[in-house]
Amino acid sequence: QIAPDPAELKSLDDAKRKMLAAALEAGYGDPDFIAYDVKLLPAPLTARARAAGKPVLTWTVRSQEQRVRAAAHADNIIFEGFRA
Image (cartoon, rainbow, N blue to C red; front, top):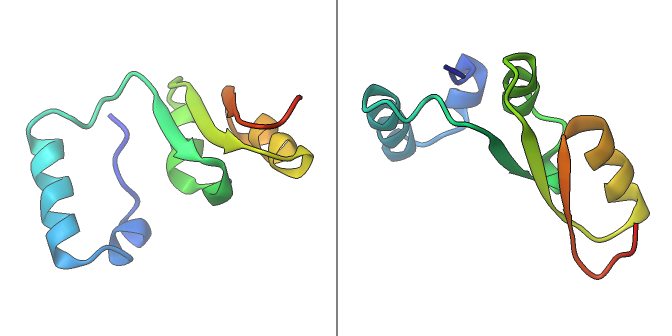
């Protein structure tokens, strides 16, 4: 399982923390992959996912700068309006 980092949890409001806890308790805490916005990379969650052998996909790459960031922190990239 890819558990949330306690520091990341502090940024969530109470309702989101409760929803996340319920999802983890229900067994939703072991995804086959993580999909993450390229604008938020790098991120502790995606680094932990990759370290656990889970692929990270990122969206939506629209520039060379974002492509470089995505290539460094993700395993697959979703492009839009940009030829890599």
